Image 1 (cartoon, rainbow, N blue to C red):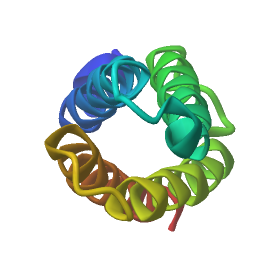
Image 2 (cartoon, rainbow, N blue to C red):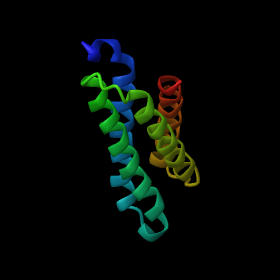
Image 3 (cartoon, helix red, strand yellow):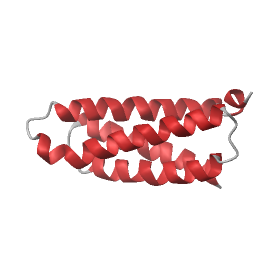
Image 4 (spheres, rainbow, N blue to C red):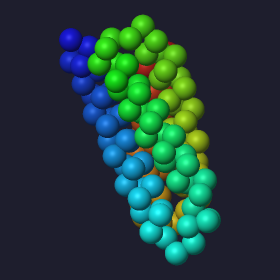
Length: 109
């Protein structure tokens, strides 16, 4: 039943997971991969955090607010790092992570 309550939130989290994973893979294809290391690491962390929060929501975990608070912090960090890069995949990831962070902040409140 929790998946119905959180339908929009789950969709946003899944979009963030997919976008971060796409960004991560695209970063690995860039000419200067060393310059993208922090972006790659945060993409991975953000995707994992969003996936874990989504899983907790489908279990109707009592810790959703706390997990959402942590997820918001990670999404904001990922958005900030991705926003430093001009690549289209990074800019899209920054946008999606910012939106996901806002949604997580609402869940944490």
